[in-house]
Length: 266
Image (cartoon, rainbow, N blue to C red; front, side, top):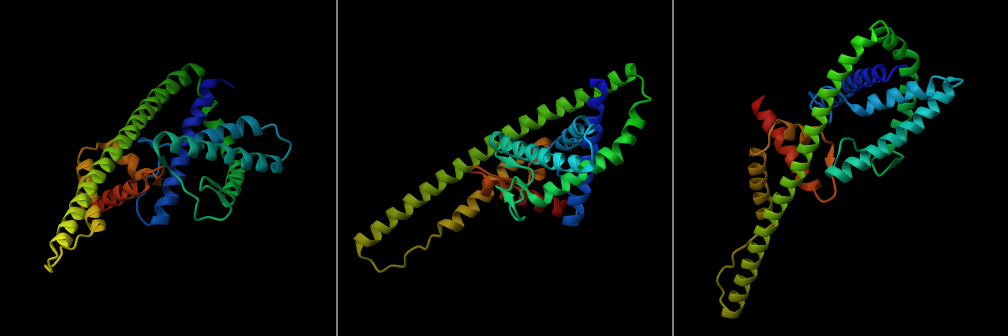
């Protein structure tokens, strides 16, 4: 078994994972929902899981051992991936908080059981056909195919990572701008209140809702931010499930505005 073949399997299983994920999410939301983290049609976490399933579980004695190994392996991969992406980019691409027996929304028992079943489907159902697809291809043809896949995949990963980093910069700048304006508005409100009290006037006081003002200013700042974002950045926002670590509110509003914009353009 050559490393070139293994990498081709990884890409093909990543594509199959993207097809499954997109169909499932689109049917669930009754609209097209591309939840892939990257711009291309692949979900690497599925490719990693499937390849590890094939490499580590092929020699196991029975389906029960494969099932429990895939359960445990999928839980580790999902948790580590979710934790890492959250720490690096303040965003996660799945959230199981509303499902039973979940751990911080990163993994949950129903999905872990599902991945155990998926491990059986991959090993005993899909992989024999995958081998029939790749085995007839000579190694001297597999190598350039793998290199092409690798170049496209690496470029996509680099662009996505840069886009996510830029989104965090933009969200931080938006939050700072809104907070500064709220602070200035609040100071003006306090000063006006002091003057009215010291003057003892019975004039009608200006009613200022800081919450309404914050909502309006946040929307305006987010519209400015969205106008500066390119295709990769808007895709990264749309595909994420939620933002965390201080950006959950802004990230959620940004996703809502993008959905509203897409609805108007449709």
